[in-house]
Image (cartoon, rainbow, N blue to C red):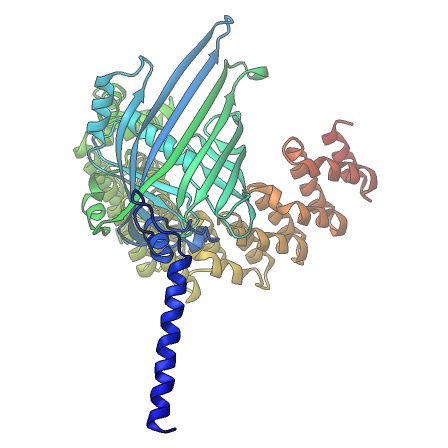
Length: 620
């Protein structure tokens, strides 16, 4: 193309562009003097009117995304109204409640727990005498220091760690709030859980809601509680989660009824309403160090812990029990078998009151100056006393190489029964297991290590997990017999022991498989439920299959109804079918399929005994 032709083409292109620009200007609507010029559509929409946030399906439970320093801020309202119908026909009502700001910061993981720091700023408190400014100011003062909360991987509240300034009433309010708003997740759109609240362990059913990351929780019934008669329970809560799996909002209510009917107790109705609303999020420089630095001064409780005696009350009760008695006086009372229960209580109180008598008791035991029964009674009293001095005394007997093996074994068993042990007891048990040549002492130490790990999971979750891992390691190396290992892991009830327990389900000896089945029953989680179903259906031993049914009876039975129906159809052992029928008889009021299965058994089972039992449970 010649230079001249190129120039003509370029000129034509320029003229065409100019004409198109003028045409566009003529078709635009001119802006009025009062109206500012139109802003570019794309820029204005992005800057001033952001598009609605898209809610994507998120995660929950084990898959939660927890970032150290991530702080969520909530407002909360919780009200509890208690109505009591007295024998005179009168009715008493009591209102307890509080509102405020709740900030929850993730600190990190310790053992099998996630630790959070909770800061509470109460804005309202309602007590028996009504809302008072003094009560509100006192509550605010108590919560100037944080509350620490431990959750397992599914979100179940395992422990609450309180500052010494937070009294029993304040701790109860916190436990009520945490119990009412906990979200315990399993896989899938619908699941059942056993979870704690301030009264005991309850069964809850969760299902996915109508939109992303929303769930409905129904509290069905209590499985275990502190009272002899289980309270009646109905509860309904709506949850919204963030896409990372943390709770965003909660609203709901529940009703608990106690007494009435044929119990001989006044009828009590408790109505609880709760609302938790997310109001903000930010990040703080955080770690577990502040918790670790103050751990020794904190009071660690489960959700179900009742308000125990405060220090002054316990000291006064101990003085009243002891009444100036000495160790010799109480040993003589024990020897006469007069008021044994009271004598044991007095001996434990003496060991809390008089450290010199603790030293005397240890000397008598180590020197063999008292018989085996008196030694065991003193060791039990030391464990009941629970003071640091009493725990060190137990360790000195446990590790005393010249102490008779039977006494050392009993010292180990006493350690396993302590309510609030210290980690030093775990160290002693490990040394004894590795150092003793006596199988009885070693086995007793192993069983107590399992129980001790369970007791320590509240205050020392990291040490608790380390103890279970040590048990599993010794089990795999053959230091302990399989049945002892499985019994210890059953006492621990920790998921970290599941792999070893699962491997024992294929052991050639039925006794070992039975011990493994019992250990399964103590470990939480949906994965265990499916394993128990397999044992019920497939284990070659009728005794082991019956143990699986018994283990299922202590769990959320609704998850096992299909397997139980299959057992009734295919099980050859009358003993196993009887166990299933007994279990179904306990469930008629709460599981609709249970009555239908019982009617089928009453009509069609080949065994006269099984048919008769089913009919009697149906009331026929």
